Image (cartoon, rainbow, N blue to C red; front, side):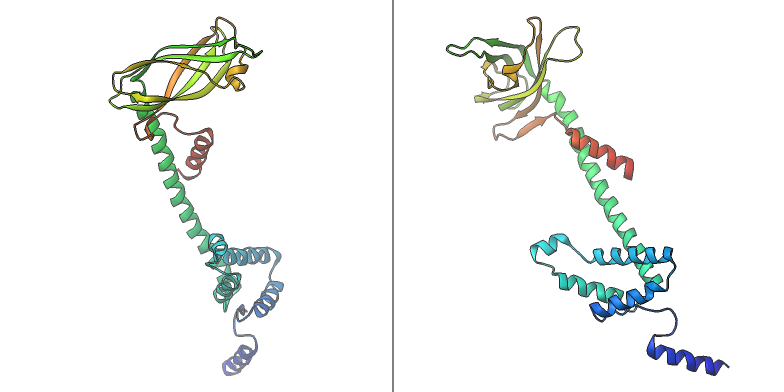
Length: 267
């Protein structure tokens, strides 16, 4: 009886292989036929799992960046996939796909943690910069619209008196200006502006500036009452090399939302 069973199994192996059916990755056509044959014998749930596993393995061999650079070809990707699937059973394909997902999740988490660290470092650096920016003192700030000769539009004017209390020469200063009225919760205007300082501003030096923003910008369109106040916050200072010495602007809204999402998902 045992001998007869062995002979039957050996004969079947010559045609289809003994045990679970396996995929044939010798060519695209052979693989397609063997996938269809194997899949047709599976329960619907297992069929879906098998199909998804095949897609996971196929995409794992593809590098879009390398394809666009010509470092990888579609034929090369197909060859890798055929080789990977050749001789595998359904369960082996599903197991391989599961392993790929685990590896991918580990890489994604590693990358996410690096990005979290970078964003948190940027936010921390911005907080540390505020102490230095506070030394660049704006002692007087005024905003008004003045009549312009031969023009029906009024010209926006910003007047500032500043003193450089930092230990560094400053070539350019960046500000956030707010025009608001006492008792009102919503400002008339909140807008950034900056000024390139001719000759720079050395430590302990003070200057008074009269700036004229574009009259067609929001500065020229604001319609604030006479009792409105103009307050200015220093948000960045550039050194002699025109690079940022201190920058308190921190994370953008997009970066802050990104950080919150990553931390919720991976921490």
